[in-house]
Image (cartoon, rainbow, N blue to C red; front, top):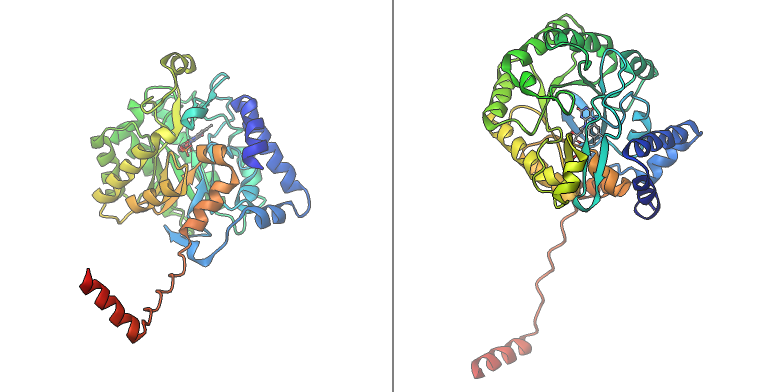
Length: 369
Ligand SMILES: Cc1cc2nc3c(=O)[nH]c(=O)nc-3n(C[C@H](O)[C@H](O)[C@H](O)COP(=O)(O)O)c2cc1C
């Protein structure tokens, strides 16, 4: 039904409208008595072998919805009912902001890709808090936090700290988005000094709390190998708990769309199929450099169960997706989870008992040949 009816309808709308419709539809389902129960019955795959414990948090399965879909924490309950093992909400900024001018989401259907330059539109910390205060028992919710676009770089650490402190008791883990606003130069967010200035106040705040909340950083796939190694070294040297690798790329490599249509779309992050290899390669690099000792959430171009298997084999502990879900719908999540459930070994067929006279015949024939 998703591929034949819902997907063509969603793709007939603008990227922005289809996102809004998807959220509205989920909210309506969640509002109807028994709606979530029905979603779970129809969509979710449950099996004890899918369960994971990563950075001290228990997950129903290792597949999560990536940040940018449930920006304000409105539908994490419905997404969980649809079978996601966790939902990363946000990016949340302290103050509401409208993001970049529209149009800002473009689908490239032949390439199974999306280019987005939304620039963290969200209704701000207070609204996210209001939704989270309803409680989310049984649903793992990560809060992805970012700084407001209007905040000068020297004040960015205060933005992150404000969201972190306020959301602390309501989130299961935090992701610090270090990727900028989807169009601006990321240089500033890549420097070790900047990353440490953002993270140190969060570590200090956490030290004074009774409960422990894991902190991860989300990185861009456009970092050089040396920059990736530098982030990995920060992971090893500080109380950082893990890395989300990666966000979408500003590169246009791997697209078959014509240069003129790529040019027409303009700036933004490319997500989906063209970045599968790149994100897996980065996860492998971080995994190897950190000796496999630190949690990694693999994200970027997870379009099939094979992609997810390759990402997990590269060293990811958990996986997130968004563009793949847009293209394939709930069936993708089902297929991935079913693939991850170990199949009972096929019984090895008992050796055929060949009657003695037949054995003789065969031997004779062989000899004749
Ligand atoms: C429309 C859209 C909005 C996004 N917004 C955010 C965001 O606010 N914060 C963030 O960290 N990542 C954001 N992302 C990036 C995704 O979380 C994910 O890392 C990226 O899309 C790669 O995964 P995918 O290929 O499965 O889509 C966004 C992606 C899309 C497509």
